[in-house]
Image (cartoon, rainbow, N blue to C red):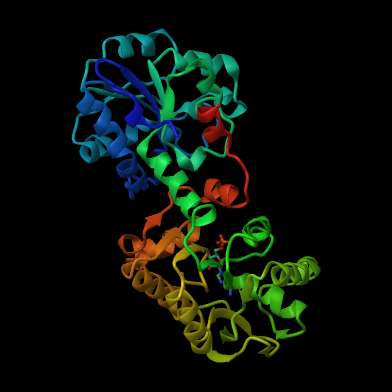
Length: 395
Ligand code: AMP
């Protein structure tokens, strides 16, 4: 795997696709700089080699040029996080930008304006990619969050850097972590799939069935399985058009010798609210007017034992509506169980938007082996797809 460790950047200009699509508050201040901090090791290696960095990213979903989505808003935060005052240029292609790049000295960093101010970025336009490619000697992709998109700066651009393209540390670590779970795992391997819907995780389940020993199901998708098996799920979330598929998955799992574990009890509520009345019942006996919003204590005991005996763990999706305190218990207990087994030497990978939010919110981020920075990208890799941004570097 070609990484930045294969190159010496002395007097070289490194053109780095980063994912600085960070959240901003109403005053355009960065509220979570995790994504910037994640790119720091790559940037520091280049500066320490004696090179310079040209950083390119998108921010939000602008419709043409719009000051609201300017990367100017994040310059100070990037400078603080990296520890170097970052220069900014209010465009990402063209003569003005090329001049700023030419004037950039070793040890300096230049941040380009939002790539998505040009529609050509998302279209994967070849000419736009070629213009971008003029801005560096070596192309580095360190943006896992957009690696599943064949955009100009994430994929198309790579063809202009024949031998001079590689993964940054962040992207390399993401690939390595997923490989550790799917292809080079120590057994037993347990995947925990939670979240709202079966439909968004179906391809993941199908792809990992033959690679893992246990699949723990949680969250809203539980009830599609329970209903398919004949249980009463009351008013719980359900995808009626996926009932047959749920049964098919259970059959396939048996054929593969993979055990699917469904919650045996649920914390149910008479409304989707923290103020609702709650009680704990068997998952198959939920009365009408009530909905399952978290897993119950018997389930947690069962899941904790499976996790304690696992050597490799993948966690995607919360076990309940963790955003509401009364239904966060299952997700917190699961995080604790994963933290414990990680401490004892297991490898644990957490990925997918909401589970990442949950591990951060409950303080587990540094107690698991790796927290992925890409939601959609991670899901596509788990589905067994080759991501265009990764393939473009390897090609
Ligand atoms: P996903 O993006 O598919 O991982 O879904 C995450 C969302 O699923 C979170 O916002 C949770 O609140 C929600 N969720 C988890 N468990 C349930 C449940 N039992 N009923 C409804 N929503 C749930």
